[in-house]
Image (cartoon, rainbow, N blue to C red; front, side):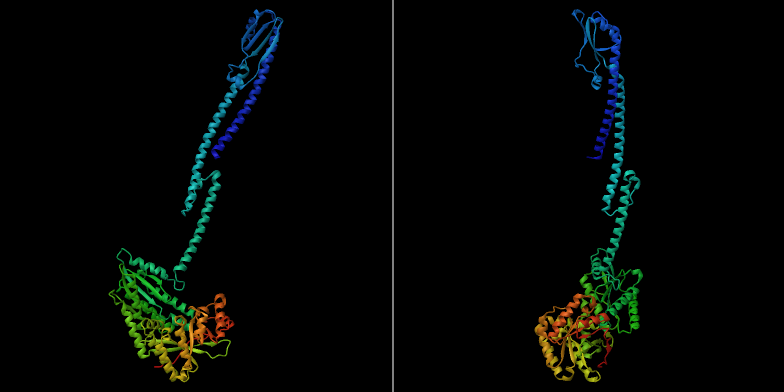
Amino acid sequence: MGLSKSFHLVLLIVFGLLFYRIYTIENNQVRIQGDAARQHFAEYIEKYSYWTGNGDDLFKTFSRDYDFQFFQYVHNSDSIHNFTYGSLAKTDQSFADTVFNIDLGYSFTFPDGRMQVKLNPIAAIETSLYKLEQVTQLLILAYVILMLLFTILILVHKRRIKYAAQYIDNISTLSFQAVEMSRLRGVLKPLGNALEKCRSKLKESLEIIRIDNEKLTKEAYQDPITGFSTRHRFNAYLEKITQSQKNLFGTLVVVKASELTNLNQLYGRIAGDNYLAKLSDCIRNAAPRQAKPEHFRISSSDFAVFLDGVSIKESINYIEKLKQQLDDYTQSTQQDSVAHIGVVPYLSDNDPTTLLAMIDSAVSIAQTLGPNRYHYLEKFDGNETFGDEHWKITINDIINRRGIKFFQQPILPCNTDNDLYRELLARFYNAEGKHLPTASVIAMSERYGLSIELDKMIITSTLQLMKENPLLTGMLGVNISATSALQAVFVYWLKEVLTHHRTEASRLVFEVNESGMQTNLAASFNFVSEIHKVGAKVAVERFGLGFTSFKFFREVRPDYIKLDNSYSNSIESDNNNKFFVRMIVDIAKRLNILVLATGVERQDEKLTLEKLLVDGLQGYYIAKPDSVINTD
């Protein structure tokens, strides 16, 4: 039952009980007055107690002082003296008789007859009836007034409650306007206070959620090392430009951190991360403020910068300033190079694929020109393949000139007296003697089918290095591509060369990437078998990134497996990596294969790997790379 109906019912009950109480009091008063009237009549009639005559005269005599509702005189012997007035039947009962039902009857015996009367109750009832009518009117008026007041209050409360309900509904739309406390006064004040508290708490909670979401978004779409946006946002930004209906234009600059792989290998991951952070500072500091450039890290070693509204000519100042930043960084670190830059113009109607192909070609050409060089490609006329041709020419030139130098990094024996080896790290140079990024040279040689010729040059250069430097003792590791190792023609050539250099061959360990060897186990087994025939050994590097299985151990049987450096990273706290390394070590020992851990950069990693009984350790913490005398 609603509040309004409940209030009506309660009010009716209260007023009903009040009316009944007043009625009871007045009814008792009427009875008292009736008894007094009857007593007074009895005293009055005593004066006529000896009356003899007819009833009509008696009625007239009494009527002068009293009003009768019923009068009857019955003579004892002569009926002619009988007289009757009124009736005892309640056929015409008045409202007063209905409200106050009192009996004012009285009987008296005279000498000649008997009288029976019923006095009219109006005189006894009139005052009480008037009072009752007045009280009833007051009660009705009070009831009406209270109901009107209640109705007004209910309307006011309804408006306030409606406001509160609308406010609660608006909370779902994240509307947090302050509560109008003036509209929620009185008994609704606690509701207003609760809404205000709820608003404050919810707003505070949502602010915390917003901050957390911003942090998560920042982590998801912002590179933690450089502070640049990630590849996902780069793709969205590129799509926004190329699909825009406006005539947008600008310059796209891609900076390749060409030395990342080399730094990670020579000096460790921390050095690589510091290198990326400083490179990003160079990119950020060189950017013109008025252009408001958009920066992105689109891969592990590639950065992109959109200079919106900047023409290719106007970008020259930025590129020159960026190159100066790179040159200064190069000199401060005494490195050969830092990065390479590709520059292309863009319009809003350009095809994204063609644009990316152009910028890739521009970077590729810049890499062949020397340290910290840049290259512009301005036209979309199919010359995006020019960079590919430039790489072919450059790699062929490297092969013909033997433009290579070596660094060496030893592998420390661990828990064993086995003699291990030093890995030779190749560095390439163009015709001008400018350093070229090693990873790019190897990747491009594989892309354009020049990996076999490049590997032949590396091997012959290594053999020449060993012959011309008698002080260079011990075993040496040489990296060759899996593409070459799985080719029967290359294996035949390598076997012939090593057959004529038995002394040097016995000191060589050929390192081949595991993922490449997994593609053809039969060819991998043939390579290992032929290498063993001439006294050399084989190490499978970056082990654990491919689909490693017992079948690979059983059928290929390399001499060493070099675990990928990701397994060394924080291995002291990574139980999954511990389990994998422990399993590999157990299997390898059963097959007389030595397990080498790479990328060891901290003492905790070294101690944990020693406990796992690996056979050797390599990394910046174990031994830093040293230069080797050039063959030239």
